[in-house]
Image (cartoon, rainbow, N blue to C red; front, side, top):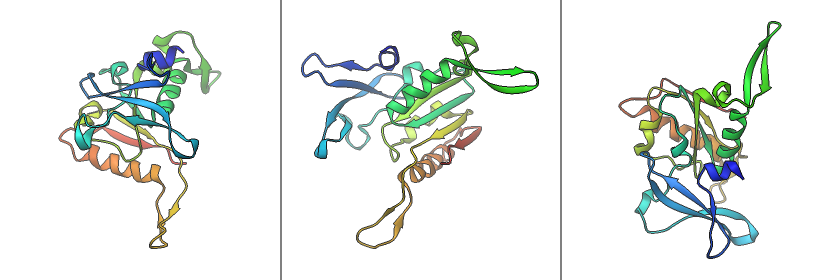
Length: 189
């Protein structure tokens, strides 16, 4: 329960559903998401409606963001962001007998998280230019989902996977800013 708590997750006293804050780039709460059941029994995060029009979505993990970090990981979805943040915080790089590998650590100051930050977008196609400042001059690692290609029902043509389309869109927005990242990497499934 520590990781969701660090990311601002709370259970609503009104209906028992998970609530998750979405943040502005300055760290203030921009919107609240409710983890709820939708059609076909699927669960998803629904942003509070009517707050900010088209840009109602917020970014996850901003209060944990370290301005001095060299690397910023950006995941698709808060759950992936939480898991990555937790795992980076309990592992470190080890160089023993000329070999490099990963080993567990209980010391956050020497963990993989010590020189990085983890942020998360609410969906693959959700990234706003106002968030660019958090990535300026950083090594950015885009870690979006491995979606399968879809076929457009009307045209019969194949549509690129959503995660890959999101990586392309986010990269274009990041590179169009006045202070782009020093490097952009992405997880190729």
